Image (tube, rainbow, N blue to C red):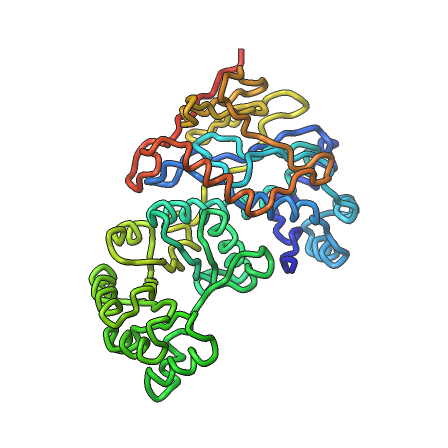
Length: 429
């Protein structure tokens, strides 16, 4: 299954203004380097997560303007005839390098580098930022939830709280971060993510009583299903569930109330009914803090929806796309509080012999001195317009898992604090 999104439609008006002017004044083909980075992490966060790169590379490969799109841009005066002809033949022929998907990033980390002619690169700004800002925000929130869950499984179930395409991307980002399942079937088909889910309260309300609803679900799906027990009275719901399905019922789900208290009571009741192996799944506006608060309770799985697909209070990773080099010459922006560092950057992550990350070192227009246990962070994704690396989603998922193991334990705290790994920019001689 491929995305229904037409990548060229993400182009912003002002990008085409610059392309038209650059084509007219002869600067469109000047060799340029753009970098994606964040000036600061969202409040309270100690790391960011690179996510969406795999999606982005495919979108860049397919970035084209069809005849109808070019005609619309010409008719509405967005572009002149010269630019319209250029767009008709557009194909990205430059290079894309960046951090691995699943890599952690910090303020100033050059997570993506796009190089090529000015016009062909500037045209990608909105596409690049819309993908990386969304997916990285979701992945960072999801990673914090995975840490808070302490090994218990999580299911992403936020499709009803997001745009239909964003919901699929969010499910992918959450899985990358360590969620075990998604309820989004489109994400399951498109990315091979395991799917899971159960009936909603509407199914119980449809039937004349709760037992009849449970019996129908079990007759259809067997005992290896999850029954939603909080439509009416939770204790009676659990009794009805076990009476209908027997103690072999796989799980019950609770979606409301004081989950800490209810989880304890539900576990005791299930055990008293002989359903000692029946799992308890909880959901209902859970974020990383709510999940952490349930760490001591007998919960087997968490369902997270709104918080994960909206970045749990940080719906964007605050990434920017800035020009840093023109024809090999570093260029800088000096705006107050928005200054940039000129020149193409190279970054390494330094580690102790034990594998714990200690520092990220960034060098503009140069290469860091390599020390034992250093790890070069950038890799090639696109060379002369052709994708050369396509890490699988499972590979990126494992990469993030290893990265989270590598940072100091303080970096995994949910409380506000300094970035998990300090960043040092080595000045140009």
